[in-house]
Length: 83
Image (cartoon, rainbow, N blue to C red; front, side, top):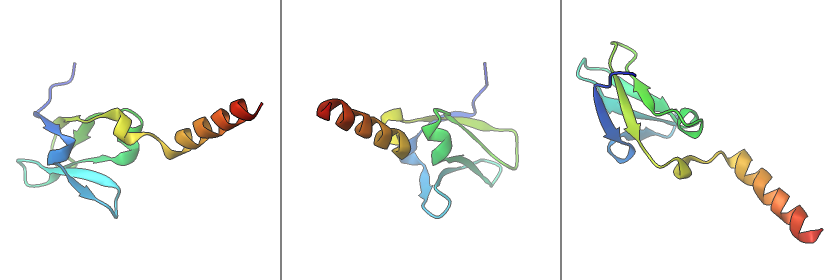
């Protein structure tokens, strides 16, 4: 079991649109970072690149559904309805 420095709500993190990632200040002076892709994949651990601390990110996985998965599901539903 991993030892977390803290548990942080996604709403308390800063979103960087250019990097498509979320950051949160680390006590070492750097920032914890987690990408949207990691959240889509179900990962909930943000690491600080400058020290060994990690935080657990609290978020709703339904808010991070892969757009490709949504498209595939929608297309499958259309095929089933018209069949």
